[in-house]
Length: 320
Ligand SMILES: NC(=O)c1ccc[n+]([C@@H]2O[C@H](COP(=O)([O-])OP(=O)(O)OC[C@H]3O[C@@H](n4cnc5c(N)ncnc54)[C@H](OP(=O)(O)O)[C@@H]3O)[C@@H](O)[C@H]2O)c1
Image (tube, rainbow, N blue to C red; front, side, top):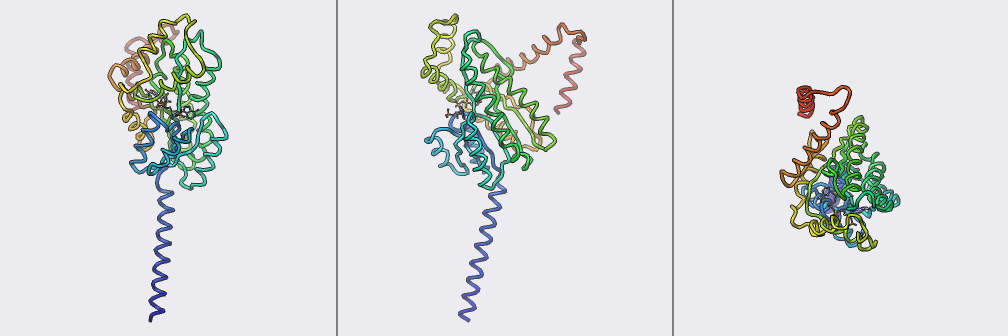
């Protein structure tokens, strides 16, 4: 009798262990996993905090050990050393994520940098720097993780900007990189459709982050100054007006909400413009319409106002 009850106990213990083991494995594969690049601060950190708090598993890309440690301490987060300009980091990240066995459902190409420089003075090295991170970065990371995203019929989201539509004094290099992200997103979206992978762009206006602080730090450490610039006064006004401290801008929760919709809603949109006030939305929509008018102005098959409205109605119907 004693032997029987001991056997029953052993059987019960083993069964529980197997059930728990299977459940752990299942939750490993069921908990949708997302990779966020540039998760150390600003928008990327907010996305990481929000998605992990909602129970998604976040692989949070960062470059500095202190950031990796900080992110790793968060629940549902595993930090991944990831400089988007380095193939070694990217390949190692792919290997790590494959080994973890959760698959990868979502990729958020968020890492980005800015420079403010007049186009007739910008150094080629500075253009290389911004394009390497803002354009080649998403290209590299997306290419490397595409097989995993295709396997999970997942989602790819690029954090572009309203600078993907707007441009202006000293914003040339930054807005060139974000305009490129718009084209990248549209082409990628068409190419990924046959794999049931949806691609979206998020277009934030001005939100609180470290983007200008990092820009000013880089200018200081690379000895970039505008003492001899043809635009010295305008540049000083811009930097004084902007300042490194962006705490006057809103926290980027709205941007993170849009990323969640792009990743997990049943009918994700191609573009999510997220602006902190009406003016920034107005500049952006007006610029798009201005470009439409400029394109139409002198073309051989020019549309009149009624025909333009008809086209607008057609496009509105497509997106409903
Ligand atoms: N904040 C805004 O108002 C705003 C508006 C429109 C669009 N955006 C876009 O939002 C994205 C995030 O920027 P943010 O405003 O949140 O600025 P942020 O606080 O400066 O964050 C930028 C992130 O990118 C990372 N990063 C920079 N170079 C990298 C590289 N080579 N490899 C991997 N990561 C790198 C940074 O990491 P380190 O800490 O290691 O430097 C940081 O985690 C950018 O694409 C930006 O263009 C921002």
